[in-house]
Structures are given as structure tokens and as C-alpha cells.
Image (tube, rainbow, N blue to C red; front, side, top):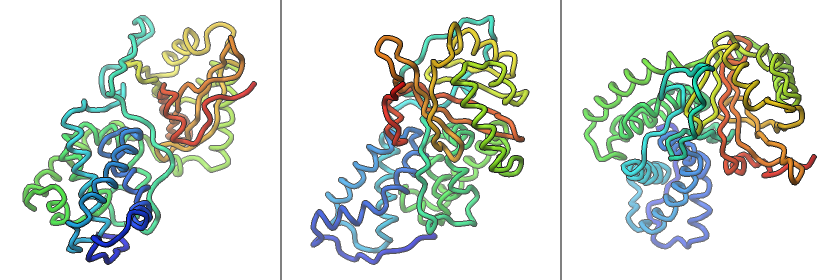
Length: 340
């Protein structure tokens, strides 16, 4: 296991303040780990806090046979798996149904917790990033990877994350999950087969191979201008021919410039839409993102609407996913309102 180990043979005599400082140093990486398993930044935050409380309560049982970090991961992983027994699988519209067309009515939102959520640019410190892992830290939180990952049963999902993202050994994973090494290897084989099948379909090309930082900056400036001026043609020009667009919790999604343009004209840019939207830049899931705000016509100013993740491929926008949940903006340290 690639990590900085901490020798702590006995935690019985540690006070709560020192224990809190010790566990706090693992918060970022544990939150990313729980997010990969759960698909929700809000639930991941809760699970990390529960992990710390559980670790404090059971500190006398820690005997130092594994690193303190591994012990925390064991608690967090099993808490996540226990919670998933009572929760539906999360996904995005693109894997739930076929692409919608403009002649179909827009379906009502599905408000149950079935949607993946965006994740802020808050990945673990570099010392825990092993270049030998199958998936990099950045790639392992992209929407394409998460969407594919959440097609797996929870235990296979945990095995693949521990082995292929965190680069743990099979015997370490077996200890975490209370399984045998052969069962871990079997689960990993099934998980890799399923993931690779779907990931190749959903994966969009890495922007770094096709667009410079300066060109990316210009593209994003044009994107913001198109939204804030309700310029449908300007937005569509930035899209790939096979670009996709979705706004969960609405379950429909759209593919292609013509379909996206038609949808935008009759919905988010309908009427006198210039000045209706404001965007604040952020980073989400290893990709460019924005906090999206909508004009409050009765009170003035702009209210939080959701978080957008913009995926580039081949120098153009391959996907726009808008997560329509104002509560998400606090995880990106964005305000809930904007003035005119």
C-alpha cells in the first residue's frame, strides 16, 4: 500500500482533541473515497464524520497491526457498504434511458436520491497518489468513470476502488472487506470486465491532448458569454457534433447540436432570456465547472440553481451536465446568492 504510515500501537490514552487532529489529516482522501463508493458528496461528508466518531468510539480496539490510515479506510468502506443496502443505485440520465427527442414532452423530475452528484476539486494529497495505479486520482472522479463505476454492485465497486485507484494489495482488501483473497481477485476480475465495457462508451477524450490552456480559457469565456446572453447559436458552436446535455433530476437527456439547440430555445433560453443566468467558475470532477445562478425576477439578484460540469473532447464540448440542486454549491465554496 503506497502511503505514509503512522506508528500508533495504542490509542487508548489519546485525548479527544489529539485524536481529532490525527483523523482530520485524512479527511480529504476519505471524503473522496466515500464519494467514489456512494456517488454523493453530501453523503460522503456525513460518512466521513461517522467514520471519525466510530474510530473514536473503537479506538481501544486498534492494535497497530495495520496502519492507522488503513484502519480508517476499513471503517469508512464498511460504513459505506452498510448504507448502500438501504439506498438506490445512483447514475446519470445518459445510462438510464435512450436519448430524448424534441417531439417528446420533458418528463417530470425524479427527486429520489438516484442521481450522481458533482465533486469539488479536493483530491488527496500527492503523497498518496501512486503512478502505478490503473486509474489516476483525477480520472477516478470524472463523471464518465463514476457513471461506469456505479453500474457495479457495491462490493465489486469497493474492491475495484481499493485495488485499481488506491493500489492496495489483494490481502489488504480482503482484510477490509472480511473476504478471502481468491474472492477479492474474482470480484476484481468481474468488476474490471464490466467497467471497461461501459467506460469505453462513456469516456470522452482528455482535453489536455487536444487543447491548450489558453484555448480552453477562450472556449470557457465564450461558453459563459453564451449562457449569460442567451446566445443559442454561440452555445451550439462550442459543442461537438455528438455532444450531450442533461439536467438531473430531469431524467431526459439530449444528443447532437440540433436537439440541444431546440431544447435550449424552448426552455432555459426561452423568451427574453438575456441576463437570466449568471455563472461562477469552479472545478468539478477533474473538469471545468460552474456554479449556475438564475435571476430572481421578483426580488432582484440571482439565486443558486445548481452546479454544471463541462466535459471537453477533441477541443470542443462533449457534454454539459447541470446538477439542479442549490444545496451543492456550498461544497464548492460558492455563495447561495449573487447581486445584480
